[in-house]
Image 1 (cartoon, one colour):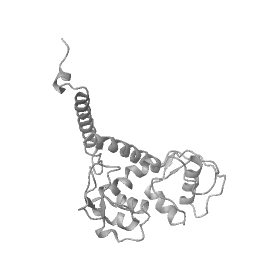
Image 2 (cartoon, one colour):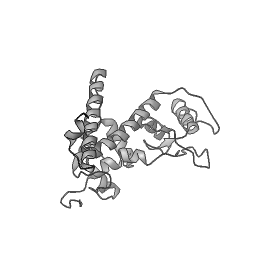
Image 3 (cartoon, rainbow, N blue to C red):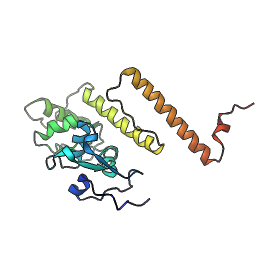
Image 4 (tube, rainbow, N blue to C red):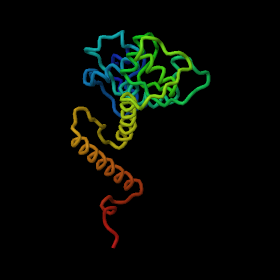
Length: 220
Protein backbone atom coordinates (compact mmCIF):
# COMPACT_ATOMS: atom_id res chain seq x y z
CA UNK A 1 0.00 0.00 0.00
CA UNK A 2 1.45 3.36 -1.10
CA UNK A 3 1.26 6.69 0.67
CA UNK A 4 -1.93 8.56 -0.18
CA UNK A 5 -0.60 11.74 -1.77
CA UNK A 6 -3.98 13.48 -1.41
CA UNK A 7 -3.59 13.63 2.37
CA UNK A 8 -2.15 16.85 3.74
CA UNK A 9 0.81 17.01 6.11
CA UNK A 10 0.08 16.96 9.84
CA UNK A 11 1.43 19.64 12.18
CA UNK A 12 4.01 17.24 13.61
CA UNK A 13 5.39 16.28 10.20
CA UNK A 14 5.44 19.88 9.04
CA UNK A 15 7.18 21.15 12.18
CA UNK A 16 9.88 18.47 12.42
CA UNK A 17 10.29 18.14 8.64
CA UNK A 18 9.30 14.48 8.46
CA UNK A 19 7.11 12.80 5.85
CA UNK A 20 3.59 11.95 6.98
CA UNK A 21 1.31 8.96 6.33
CA UNK A 22 4.15 6.44 5.98
CA UNK A 23 3.27 2.80 6.58
CA UNK A 24 6.38 1.91 8.58
CA UNK A 25 4.54 1.47 11.87
CA UNK A 26 0.86 1.19 10.96
CA UNK A 27 -1.32 -0.05 8.13
CA UNK A 28 -3.69 2.89 8.50
CA UNK A 29 -3.48 6.34 6.96
CA UNK A 30 -5.35 9.40 8.08
CA UNK A 31 -5.36 12.48 10.28
CA UNK A 32 -6.48 13.04 13.86
CA UNK A 33 -6.80 16.08 16.08
CA UNK A 34 -4.23 16.11 18.86
CA UNK A 35 -7.06 17.10 21.19
CA UNK A 36 -8.60 13.65 20.64
CA UNK A 37 -5.92 12.31 22.98
CA UNK A 38 -5.69 12.80 26.73
CA UNK A 39 -3.69 15.76 28.08
CA UNK A 40 -0.86 13.45 29.19
CA UNK A 41 -0.58 11.83 25.77
CA UNK A 42 -0.63 15.25 24.07
CA UNK A 43 2.24 16.49 26.24
CA UNK A 44 4.15 13.24 25.74
CA UNK A 45 3.90 13.47 21.93
CA UNK A 46 5.01 17.12 21.96
CA UNK A 47 7.99 16.45 24.24
CA UNK A 48 9.07 13.43 22.18
CA UNK A 49 8.91 15.50 19.00
CA UNK A 50 10.79 18.28 20.85
CA UNK A 51 8.20 20.87 19.89
CA UNK A 52 6.55 21.33 23.30
CA UNK A 53 7.37 25.06 23.41
CA UNK A 54 7.01 25.78 19.69
CA UNK A 55 3.37 25.01 19.10
CA UNK A 56 -0.07 26.01 20.33
CA UNK A 57 -1.56 22.53 20.62
CA UNK A 58 -5.17 23.76 20.54
CA UNK A 59 -5.82 22.95 16.87
CA UNK A 60 -2.86 20.71 16.11
CA UNK A 61 -3.21 17.64 13.91
CA UNK A 62 -1.26 14.39 13.97
CA UNK A 63 -1.24 11.67 11.32
CA UNK A 64 -1.42 7.95 12.12
CA UNK A 65 2.27 7.55 11.29
CA UNK A 66 3.45 10.17 13.77
CA UNK A 67 0.95 8.97 16.37
CA UNK A 68 2.72 5.60 16.31
CA UNK A 69 6.18 7.12 15.91
CA UNK A 70 5.84 9.19 19.08
CA UNK A 71 3.71 6.57 20.84
CA UNK A 72 4.42 2.87 21.28
CA UNK A 73 7.18 2.75 18.67
CA UNK A 74 9.15 5.47 20.45
CA UNK A 75 9.11 3.50 23.70
CA UNK A 76 10.39 0.32 22.04
CA UNK A 77 13.43 2.10 20.63
CA UNK A 78 15.03 2.75 24.01
CA UNK A 79 16.35 -0.04 26.22
CA UNK A 80 19.65 1.52 27.34
CA UNK A 81 20.15 4.12 30.04
CA UNK A 82 20.18 7.60 28.49
CA UNK A 83 22.81 8.64 31.06
CA UNK A 84 21.38 12.12 31.63
CA UNK A 85 23.87 12.82 34.44
CA UNK A 86 26.93 11.54 32.50
CA UNK A 87 27.61 9.30 35.47
CA UNK A 88 28.92 6.26 33.57
CA UNK A 89 31.08 5.81 30.47
CA UNK A 90 29.93 2.34 29.46
CA UNK A 91 26.40 1.74 28.21
CA UNK A 92 24.07 0.47 30.92
CA UNK A 93 20.80 -1.38 30.58
CA UNK A 94 17.74 0.73 31.20
CA UNK A 95 15.47 -0.54 33.96
CA UNK A 96 13.21 2.45 34.64
CA UNK A 97 11.12 4.24 32.01
CA UNK A 98 11.03 8.01 32.42
CA UNK A 99 7.41 9.04 32.94
CA UNK A 100 5.89 12.28 31.70
CA UNK A 101 5.71 13.61 35.27
CA UNK A 102 9.39 12.92 35.96
CA UNK A 103 10.44 14.30 32.57
CA UNK A 104 8.60 17.58 33.21
CA UNK A 105 10.10 17.93 36.69
CA UNK A 106 13.65 17.35 35.43
CA UNK A 107 13.15 19.60 32.38
CA UNK A 108 12.26 22.46 34.72
CA UNK A 109 15.70 22.01 36.29
CA UNK A 110 17.38 22.29 32.87
CA UNK A 111 17.99 18.56 32.39
CA UNK A 112 17.48 17.34 28.82
CA UNK A 113 15.13 14.38 29.17
CA UNK A 114 12.24 12.88 27.20
CA UNK A 115 9.38 10.70 28.51
CA UNK A 116 9.93 7.17 27.26
CA UNK A 117 13.70 7.22 27.62
CA UNK A 118 15.09 4.76 30.13
CA UNK A 119 17.41 5.07 33.11
CA UNK A 120 19.53 2.50 34.89
CA UNK A 121 18.90 1.95 38.60
CA UNK A 122 21.52 4.43 39.81
CA UNK A 123 20.55 7.19 37.36
CA UNK A 124 16.90 6.72 38.27
CA UNK A 125 17.71 7.16 41.96
CA UNK A 126 19.62 10.34 41.14
CA UNK A 127 16.72 11.58 39.04
CA UNK A 128 14.29 10.97 41.89
CA UNK A 129 16.58 12.77 44.32
CA UNK A 130 16.89 15.64 41.84
CA UNK A 131 13.12 15.77 41.58
CA UNK A 132 12.43 15.62 45.30
CA UNK A 133 15.17 17.94 46.60
CA UNK A 134 16.38 21.41 45.77
CA UNK A 135 19.99 20.24 45.97
CA UNK A 136 21.21 18.33 42.89
CA UNK A 137 22.22 14.70 43.23
CA UNK A 138 25.93 14.02 43.49
CA UNK A 139 27.74 11.45 41.38
CA UNK A 140 28.03 8.13 43.14
CA UNK A 141 24.84 8.56 45.18
CA UNK A 142 23.07 5.24 45.54
CA UNK A 143 19.81 5.19 47.46
CA UNK A 144 17.74 2.05 47.82
CA UNK A 145 14.18 3.17 47.08
CA UNK A 146 11.13 1.01 47.34
CA UNK A 147 9.09 0.54 44.16
CA UNK A 148 7.28 3.82 43.58
CA UNK A 149 4.02 4.78 41.96
CA UNK A 150 6.03 6.25 39.10
CA UNK A 151 7.69 2.90 38.44
CA UNK A 152 4.40 1.04 38.62
CA UNK A 153 2.78 3.49 36.19
CA UNK A 154 5.71 3.22 33.78
CA UNK A 155 5.57 -0.57 33.85
CA UNK A 156 1.84 -0.55 33.14
CA UNK A 157 2.30 1.96 30.33
CA UNK A 158 5.01 -0.15 28.71
CA UNK A 159 2.93 -3.33 29.03
CA UNK A 160 -0.06 -1.63 27.41
CA UNK A 161 2.14 -0.39 24.59
CA UNK A 162 3.44 -3.87 23.80
CA UNK A 163 -0.05 -5.40 23.93
CA UNK A 164 -1.60 -2.67 21.78
CA UNK A 165 1.05 -3.23 19.11
CA UNK A 166 0.17 -6.94 19.09
CA UNK A 167 -3.55 -6.18 19.09
CA UNK A 168 -3.17 -3.94 16.05
CA UNK A 169 -1.71 -6.85 14.10
CA UNK A 170 -4.67 -8.98 15.19
CA UNK A 171 -7.20 -6.27 14.24
CA UNK A 172 -8.24 -5.92 17.89
CA UNK A 173 -8.93 -2.44 19.28
CA UNK A 174 -6.31 -1.01 21.72
CA UNK A 175 -6.53 -1.27 25.49
CA UNK A 176 -8.20 1.72 27.17
CA UNK A 177 -8.65 1.63 30.93
CA UNK A 178 -9.07 5.31 31.82
CA UNK A 179 -12.13 5.83 34.00
CA UNK A 180 -13.06 2.16 34.18
CA UNK A 181 -14.06 0.51 37.44
CA UNK A 182 -12.29 -2.68 38.54
CA UNK A 183 -15.15 -4.87 37.31
CA UNK A 184 -15.25 -3.13 33.93
CA UNK A 185 -11.48 -3.59 33.64
CA UNK A 186 -11.95 -7.31 34.27
CA UNK A 187 -14.69 -7.46 31.63
CA UNK A 188 -12.50 -5.46 29.24
CA UNK A 189 -9.61 -7.90 29.76
CA UNK A 190 -11.82 -10.94 29.17
CA UNK A 191 -13.24 -9.39 26.01
CA UNK A 192 -9.78 -8.57 24.64
CA UNK A 193 -8.57 -12.10 25.35
CA UNK A 194 -11.60 -13.62 23.60
CA UNK A 195 -11.21 -11.39 20.54
CA UNK A 196 -7.45 -11.96 20.34
CA UNK A 197 -7.90 -15.75 20.61
CA UNK A 198 -10.60 -15.69 17.93
CA UNK A 199 -8.36 -13.66 15.62
CA UNK A 200 -5.42 -16.02 16.18
CA UNK A 201 -7.67 -19.02 15.52
CA UNK A 202 -8.86 -17.54 12.23
CA UNK A 203 -5.33 -16.73 11.09
CA UNK A 204 -3.95 -20.14 12.00
CA UNK A 205 -6.86 -21.84 10.23
CA UNK A 206 -6.28 -19.73 7.12
CA UNK A 207 -2.54 -20.40 7.21
CA UNK A 208 -2.97 -24.19 7.25
CA UNK A 209 -6.08 -24.10 5.02
CA UNK A 210 -8.74 -25.55 7.30
CA UNK A 211 -12.17 -24.32 8.33
CA UNK A 212 -12.38 -22.63 11.74
CA UNK A 213 -15.46 -24.68 12.54
CA UNK A 214 -13.46 -27.87 12.10
CA UNK A 215 -11.07 -26.73 14.80
CA UNK A 216 -13.94 -26.38 17.25
CA UNK A 217 -15.23 -29.89 16.74
CA UNK A 218 -14.27 -32.39 19.40
CA UNK A 219 -12.51 -35.55 18.30
CA UNK A 220 -14.78 -38.63 18.45
